[in-house]
Amino acid sequence: MFLSFFFFFFFFFFNKKETVKVVGTIYSDYDGALDSASTLLVGSDVMMCRTVRLNFSKMKSVAVFPGQVVLASGINPRGDVFMVEELITEQDLMMPSPPLLADQLSFVVAAGPFTNADDLVYDPLQDLVTYLKENKPNVLILTGPFVDSNHKLIKENVTRTETFEMFFEKIMDGIIDTVGTDTTILVVASYRDAHADPVYPTMPMTLSRTYSNVHMLPDPSLVDLNGLTIGLTSTDILDHILTQELAVNAGDKVKRAVNYLFHQKSFYPLNPPIEDTINFDSDLASKFANIDQIPNIIILPSDQKCFLRLVNGCLAINPGRLADINGGTFARFIITPTDPKEENNPFSYIGCQVRKV
Image 1: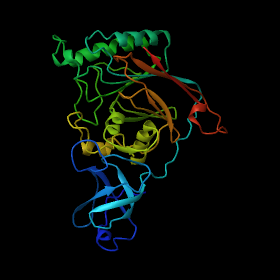
Image 2: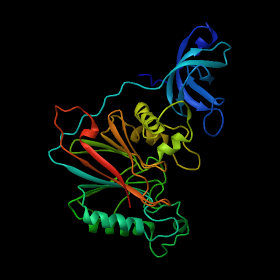
Image 3: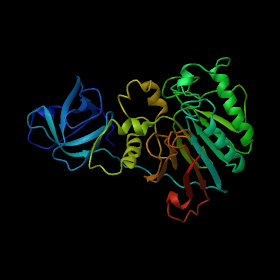
Image 4: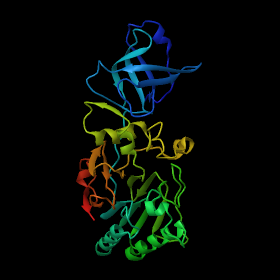
């Protein structure tokens, strides 16, 4: 709709009391989260980059974040502050179609870390494996980190005689041996894994052995399972974006953050990314972090509170962390075949719950 970076600033110098519309990208003029005094709109004309400070005092509610492309309507009476009267941040989106499944599908989703912060025993993972042994799902989705580079003992290289790659292989072997070959296993990479590429988007991790039912995926990914489209990431974009946004009277923060991803068509629309947290490759992101279609389900692991939300026809799920100081969690859900004549409501064919480990 308006994803263009051309910003016609000649309107700022002529007819300053008339309402005009301008397109640009939201940025802050200093490091840190946005606030009402720091928000800039940045764009370009054919000659150079242009900026103007935004004033939202005329608006009853506002929700913006750094890197967001918006269309603003308002006036610029003095030439240096744009008084925003209306802010358009959304575009028309096509809701996902329900999957045409022949049989019921059961899923389990778990997000790392998979061991407690003070050991490498992986007790939470053992509890999950016990559950999987008794309740074998059709699909198991695991998102990293598995060998968390932020873990104190990993930093100290307590694994000693084996490489991080070998350590990861042992973890996966235990899971695969328990689950068996009847369950499809999707493993999403994480830049936080000690043996993975420390760059986002992150390339798939590898195993020395090949398993017909195991698929190593990059972060982020869009996968199609029998017509069911699932968006997958291991990166906590929700926490990143919610800590940087400016939001006043903006409603449900979870729905708002998920909507950011869909309307900006990106798994990581925040720009600049969180400093000292993620090594962001903008060239790779422009190719591999796009959301070209709204999935039926999107998995968004986060340090935010666990949630299930229906957003633009997509079921958004934060399964929580399998290892958590307050008690680990994972998600399980069942997708049932749909009647084409029924209303397109994911809750009519998806049953989901978040469970304690």
